[in-house]
Amino acid sequence: MIVSNSSPLIVFSKINRLSLLKEMFGEVYIPKAVFEEVTRGRKGEEIVKNKWIKIKEIRDKDFAEYLSKMIGRGEAEAIILAKECRSKLLIDDAQGRKHAELLDLKFIGCLGLVKLAKKQGLIESAGEVIMEMKDESFYVDEGLITALLESVGEK
Image 1 (tube, one colour):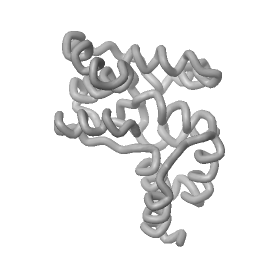
Image 2 (cartoon, rainbow, N blue to C red):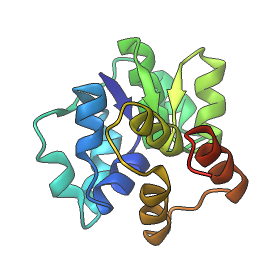
Image 3 (tube, rainbow, N blue to C red):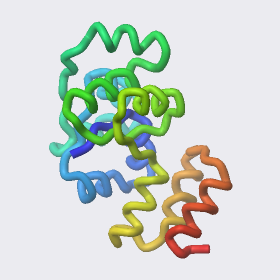
């Protein structure tokens, strides 16, 4: 099980690889704010129709209100839900990651997910998946891509 922010769900849905999340984590929990962000987009209904993606209410709404003054509401609720569920967090947002780190949460981003999928044999080529992500306007530093590809033996 993992808690996800909206961006990774949207990115992996756009490249038709959302099922990787199910294969890797079984269930994906999302807070209400992430559900609302995801369902605004063209792939939203496709994402949330999956029974293994579960919407879960956060308990600490006061902390969500406070945290959402510094980062987006979806990021704030995802961080809080991960803390409440004692779960790893799937998030790419740099500010969100800083706050997750301050709360001692373990997290992974889209690139880390691609690396893990490659190491688990779930994808044939990390480079191909990253190119698909970039074709959908997913921005990532070229240095990070090179390091990732080297680490999985693709460069």
